[in-house]
Length: 395
Image (tube, rainbow, N blue to C red; front, side):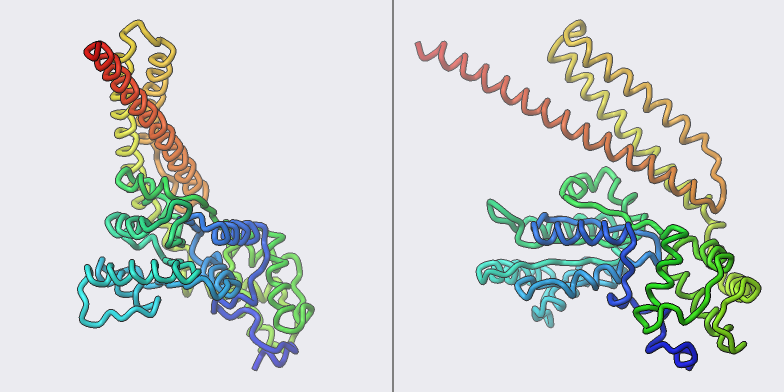
């Protein structure tokens, strides 16, 4: 009704994830580039994260529309499931019969299907949306699904899509193998103030008339502050503002009108009220990071012991000194993390968590490399000794 009043062909701010409305922000263009490359190169695991309402599902639908017929896709949206239910949904979406079959049989059917598609020149991909709801055990089972491969490529490509918590879950020590298999990772951040304005005009243009509504800069400031650049909240704010303008028979959303609409929306729905629980959520994240850092310290100490046994107390001093410095820095980090007093409901807090977790993840990856090198060096040393003894006794 109000769309006709504004001369539009459809509602520009509906909440359905329609790929036609996808706004090419800097973040979304980057994510599209990463996803298109990852899928075309068949890179294995791809990770896409972003806050609630940032357009992850719309992005995935855009990608799906552009896939060739040679790529068979299964998509899972309901992730509050157990192991057997997850495999059932995957097989169902691939069109594999699941009735009357147990998990073992369904896994065998899935494996046969993937191999059969490969033999026909097709590829298979699995997209798991809302992946942050999966337990670490289920995520490990998802990793095991990727074990089907040839000498040159993976037979099943897996795309994990979820909220920022997914990155924290993947940082757990028990998911190290899955973390190492993620070839491409991208995070979708909220829109900037300028992008928010262009986003609104873009959706109006797709709906038939870019200039259907007048948005004073002060009104746009208010919508941006209300939504914090989250596309879903921008849609809600604009849709209700349009209704208010329609009821007042005007084509301009004045600042006073916007203030009334946005105040009502916030008081009724409390979109940011969940931030009052930031402290308790933050404590859990701090405890998880604390535990992870302790695990890193233990691994460093094992590497130090191994280094001493290989080179002697006065052998490779440079390596030992670096290890001691790292241990000291990590112990200091443990003390700092334990002492953090969390401010409630701030984006800065969330950013600090991401920085801490990303730093821990990088340290973990470096440790994996160091331990792998040590293992290879020990194997080479053993092989060398065996060769020496063999030559001695063969004479």
